[in-house]
Length: 250
Ligand code: IP8
Image 1: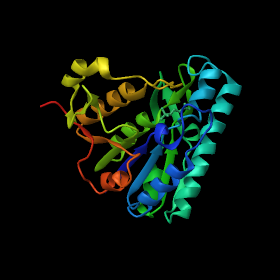
Image 2: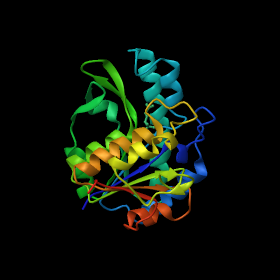
Image 3: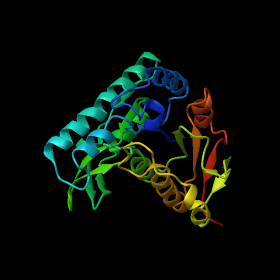
Image 4: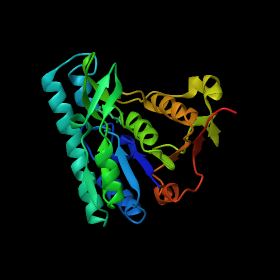
């Protein structure tokens, strides 16, 4: 059994303020996770850590060594806070920094040594990954989003449960939450799929959905739920159907 949970940067940070962590949310979600943390891999977004620096230094379009370091340094700071909160809450978290173990090709993961992650899960450690900068064999460098990490890991490790916690109740259309979504439905609702209103170099809700639709077409469904609501993260990890289910077209 492998469960993959992503918590978005908009939940863990205040995207309107550079490098501003929502410590109370981090603590609350950590305690929800700690009671159901076996067989789990956690991926978190960067939020106001990382996206601001990436934009400032022109990433991912430019290769900029200082920008790479500043962006990586920033997301690692957020990762440290989350790992610490999880440890205090009673889980056994271990940080995994994608910059050190992933190579991209044209912006997509080309090489990712996942065996240490599976070993951690087997031994009841909780790997905690994050959106990051990465070396790219065609472009020099790039950015790997938490959503891309989720879809790659879910496929590579044949995840049984994939849940994406965001700051909205699911995929919204005409202000209502869609219980399910497939590729066929995306074009119909495209206009209402916002990018982010804040600095976001990886595509907001639309980027997320495209990753998850591809995953569903490979046979792995996922849910998008609101992690700002108390108890929802725990429910998601217990397999409740909340939010929007991303599934394969019939
Ligand atoms: O917040 C972006 O990850 P995301 C990572 O999961 C960086 O899209 C470095 C901006």
